[in-house]
Image 1 (spheres, rainbow, N blue to C red):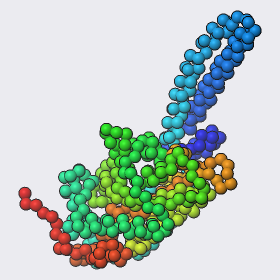
Image 2: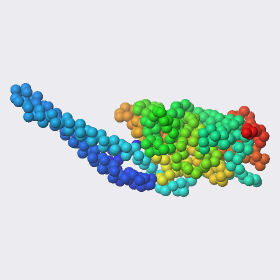
Image 3: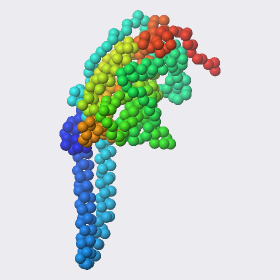
Image 4: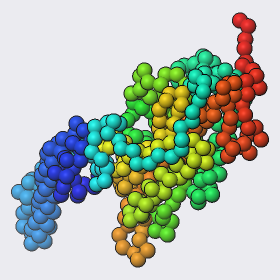
Length: 433
């Protein structure tokens, strides 16, 4: 959420930022609501002042032994007027707050202006794309042929965009998660195991609500939502709290299942593991001092890149333009891994600096060393990494002519010494009806 005073003092800058983001919101709506709020606030304060003045006059006359019936009659009508004015004020304040909750973060100065993903410039590239002397396969072909990925039974159990992993595939996802978490621990991040369901207030704190409710899975009988990412519960761990500056930067990581309705992705990535309703992801979350969040973003981005380098997976890094950036972010890097089966780079990590945008919504502050007024922290989040998409990249980049898959050396200890997934090693589970 943007600062109310900033909105009041810089309407032109906010209007320009909304245009860069191609938002349909109009700053005039805010200006009209805020002006009305001020009018009603002045009206209620004037009525309360009149009430106090009349009460004082009644007391004065009574002390003097004078009749105060005329003032009592006038004073009797004031409480109803105050209640009516207060109700109108609260209604306008609610509308103003609702508008502010739908305003996206203001892009950082160095974020490129653009319309969509076609305007995202590449800033870094690592690794040579593997060359193959045979027709390359996509991960769903490889996974099914090797008896590890079962999309048919996933659909039978839950519907489209669900998968059952057998044997080596299940173990490989677990190996990837353990490898990622170990690397994060070595880099100084505290591992967290948060709830997988959160309430509405928590979803609002990180910006998922109210704007993106259709993308979430909500429990019908309670005001709980399944988390779309560990960013939501971990960022909100310190909601409505004031922490000491010595804690900053607070660096966390968490492995959780993630649940997304993929409401806006009809027809996209309907096959395979790229866009599932349920997937596992390791997330990085930072709470930073405002002076250090830019450096923290670069650190977070580099951590995601290093994970791919340790796995020997080629990637490129892009910076998202204003039209493609997420709602809560002021700057975002996407790290895209090379997928030979699709002959393209696909996002595997998104690292964002949200400034104080989420901290204002969730009311997360720190107390400066020298005392003084508490300040809002800056929050950052980044994928580090999703196990499903990492498994996709491992299969497609490691595929061999004989149908086997060579595993990255970094994963071999996590796979009990297994170096190659070979055809016939794990036959598909078949039925006869």
